[in-house]
Image 1 (cartoon, rainbow, N blue to C red):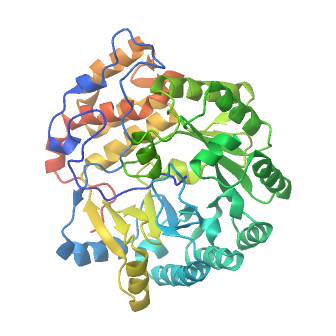
Image 2: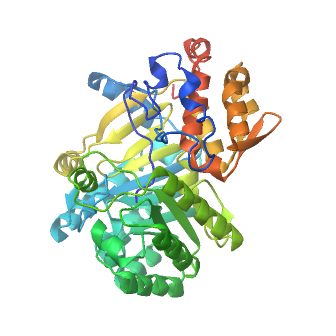
Length: 478
């Protein structure tokens, strides 16, 4: 599963909680008040709001691209930095996946790797990439990065290390699927400097996996993971998804116990996201798949996993990330949800810096053509407002489980008074506890974290217009 990236999104995009995004004007906070008498974990809200980074960014007209691209790429960022590399190939299109772009082809992936290296080499001369703080984390995601041949994995990672100012302890994550995580690729990745493997397991149950389009059965999956644990050399984390078709409480509990006994360094747990138009969405509409567990069942699954790993002594790094050992930092996932600068490589990758967000050309042929002629690969760019720093702070703090209202009050005077109805109602409902201006989420609050973040962001919007007119942009390039 690809981690969330910054995205260049036009303002006014509808939100799951109802109404328009904050750019449409002052919001009614009633949508973020918990259901009266509802159970905090299973029934606090009718649905969860999606996490939409940079939702108030204003899309920049294409004719303005050259000026903005020059401003962004031509100046070092003062912010912390990460990089995302997108590899847009998969052997199969998993039923639930909304990120699928291109089918695997050996010749095409090899040619792509060569162009990707050229893109990284060209970026090395730009101040945005060359100067500033050391890059703390790099994530090779997709798609499926392990669809690349071993020598191509080594070439891409080698180019990143050779051309970019990576921190000495930079976390370099290679995401992969079990069926093509072969020994030669593992060896090539470790030799090139990969420090972290992220495997999209989703479920260990063979029947659930088959319905999703996964190739390995339970036995094959466990054998591979045990080999990776024994190999060492890089931290090993896996993704599990709750809310999958056919994944009842028994299956989920077995998934959790299996993961707990593998000797992993860490684990990510995500709720199933059903993207419009993906095979799973069509199958559900046509009645061709087993029912998807209810939102209440998903909440119970989340609480069970969090509780079980806590019993076993695992450290909770964020709402969805847990670590068994100190080798697992989940650094990219932590930083990308803040206002850190994100350098983007590969077709369809999202980047952000200097108050702008952008996305590269997603079409492989067009991206390849631009690399061949040395043309910019930016396809869409949006300009942030002063709200961006506020939104990032709200989201990242709630991700970590402790929201410091005073820190937002410093950016938006009057915020605490505006947010008071929400914080009081959430506390009374059992979604968190307050201490002064801080709000510490419970497990129930963690499950509903995206909805809580959306509510606080809406509260901040009732006060942001004066500061926005002042033109305050954190980290904005000249």
